[in-house]
Length: 278
Ligand SMILES: [Ca+2]
Ligand SMILES: [Ca+2]
Ligand SMILES: [Ca+2]
Ligand SMILES: [Ca+2]
Image (tube, rainbow, N blue to C red; front, side, top):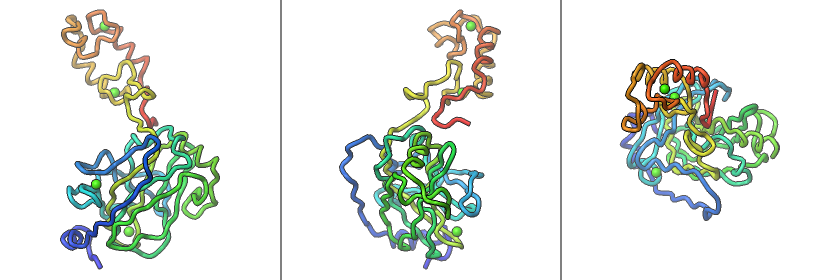
């Protein structure tokens, strides 16, 4: 048995068996996180007791170069009421192409209360879907494969079963993909590796999520960060291609930064074109 989260790392390293996973040949586009060199944008988030939304906290997971199933992996202790791994925006947005395919991942848990809990939660624009499973064996990497169809999914932790239509609806505007890191009533220490999602990678700046015209910070949002960058260029009269049109702040390309450019920010104020927008 493992007693505490971080105190037991030595024991964990010794216990890591190499249980390799097998995936089907890749016939469609997919999004993959193998964590070989870092956390790849994943977060640890908090859900309320009972696996209720909203998500109320977030932080970066721990990363280890050699404690994944293969090379690097991410892990978390039991930091929150309910602690979950949260996928980056690349996994989100319109993922209807993923319908009918399988989500894969490898997970390693340290503690269990031997109860069935949500293994994966999908957050949609108007509804959420939960896939309950018993815990994996403590101290063993276990491969999980979960079908992205209605069957087997529920509309809340203990709620009614979902239909294919529910799954299509959620995948059409996927707002969150969460893999549960809580498998014990007491402390947890959970590792994750090799997440394979059969969808299309989405990110700010791609064809479906272009930068707003006045997005100087290139985050697909027009907000105070852009105002800050714009202010640093204010009243310049030397904008040209030599200085990238005053680092992009000369929106109307007339060589000067003035109220006309500011009014263009105003016209796009709070615009969001990101994969997830508030
Ligand atoms: Ca890895
Ligand atoms: Ca716990
Ligand atoms: Ca911006
Ligand atoms: Ca101008």
